[in-house]
Length: 300
Image (cartoon, rainbow, N blue to C red; front, side):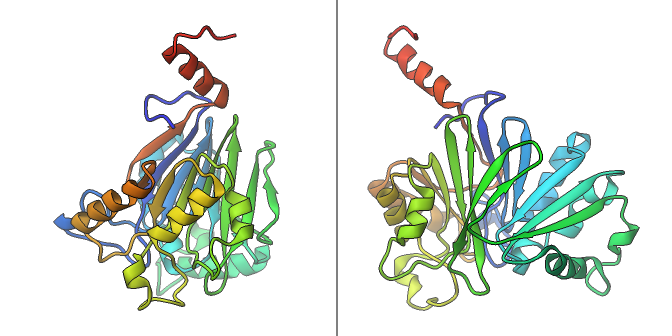
C-alpha cells in the first residue's frame, strides 16, 4: 500500500466520516473526526461513494464543479447514520442536469425510493425532491449479487449480520482490491467462512470495529463488532491491511490511539481510520516495478 502521490490508475480511498450511530464533537475528537459513515472510492478517475452519513456534506463540498454528471452512492443499509447526509449533498442541491443513483441491498427500487424520499420531506427537511434540479434514481439488489455499471465496472456484494440487514462491498481495480464491511456483528464461530471468502486476499478491508472485546458483552445484539474480531478476520483471510471504522462516538482520540497501538502490536498493517485520510493503492504492475527498483532489479 502506498500513501504517496496517486497514479491516475490507482484504487483510491478517502474517509469523510468514520463514526457510527451519531456524530462526535469537541476538541478530544479532532484527530479521528466526528462525522458518520461516508467513504470516497475512486477506480482511477471513476467515483463511487459508500454510504451517505454526515460526512457526505464535506465530500460534496470538496467535489464542487468537478462532481460528475452521474453520482453513484452505494448504501450499506438505510439506518439514519448512513443516510442523514444525503439532503445536504451540495452536488444534488445545486447540480443542474445531474443524476444521483443510489444502490441499496435487499430492497427493490421503489422501496428504496420510498424510504429515501422521506428524508426530503417536511418536517424533516424543507425541500422536496421534486424541487431539486437533480434527478434521483434508486436501485435495489439482493446482497450477494455483483453490481455491474454502465461503464463495465463491477462491484461485489455480500450480506452482513446486522439488524434489518446490511451489505458489504468489494472493489477491484488494476489488480488491487478494497472491501467495505461496515455494520456487521461477528458470529460464533468466527471468522464467518462466507465473509472470509468474500474478503480473501484484499489489499485493504474497512471494518466495523465500533467496540472493544471488553465492551462487547454490554452491546451484544446491536449489530456491531470489535477491532479484535476485525484483526482475526483479516488475518484468517489473508487481508494485507485493515482500517477500523464505524467508531463509537464516545471513544475520544486518546482512547483510539491507545487501541490502535494495541492493535498494531498484533497486526502492524492495521490502523484506525481518520476523517479525510486518503489511501492510494497503486496498480499491481506499478507496485511490482517499485519493488524491483528498490532492490535494483531491472524491470522486464
